[in-house]
Image 1 (cartoon, rainbow, N blue to C red):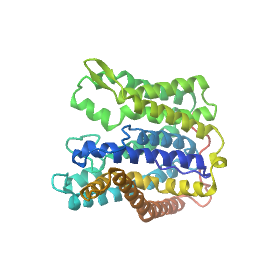
Image 2: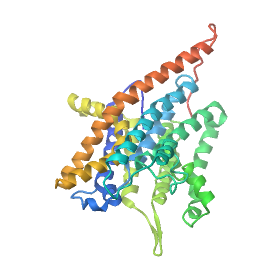
Image 3: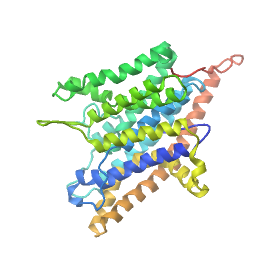
Length: 372
């Protein structure tokens, strides 16, 4: 989710910001009523879970772009320093909001729920550790992915032909296990598969494949095959098995396919700044800069906003606008007060620590090359 690049491009800001807007619309117009039917029907509904999944594709792409810049330790710590502090702060803020502001009949978390969410235990035992905010399912997957990427890059399996074989295995093995996943497997299997996010790995493959293709590390034919299988895996992930057969949610599936095409165009083509006036570019860049904070804090607190506005008789469209506006303001505050200062502090601490450990006559190690 968190993207940093030395050469900022408006195309990436637009793609990332657009994905977060899709997340906001999905939660404000669809999931809000699924979780709280008493809010009543919405006049506009966007029922497709697309944005968060595409953000994982983007994260994987930028992991491939940046992993060869500087030391692996600094690469890994930079991701931790960017992702973790605002996540922890958002969890605490959401806990207090739900604990003390939830109306009667809504989920009111206890301290054990706060601890379980801070430790990110939901994917492992969702019945015992309910989400405070459902958006947070992506965070442990990103942390695990960045850690695995750094470990792989240290050895031969993070480069060349071995890395491509590994990509195919990471894509095909979960696909082969899909029949077992939907057939009522034992609990230990569900804990492992869901805990490590096996059923989401195709999203990381999709992003890395885009980078390999733009660097001509894979042919266009192999790239297309990889992406078609990634979209297939996503279709099966969201599919329901019914007596009539497999029911695929085609809206989300086609949305992911279209999103991968857009991400590929952003990666391979020129920047899109020539098509947008400067004031629009500034707005897009600003929103992209706070989008991670918006993503982290908009959903559960936004449902409270919908409840209050609904009680005042506000039109459903204005309720949606109110939830989105609240998420943007809170996301901006989280970015300004936690994400950016925490990242600067932690990176300064890391650089100071590594400088003390490095002998004066030993130059800083700089990794060469990139995956593939």
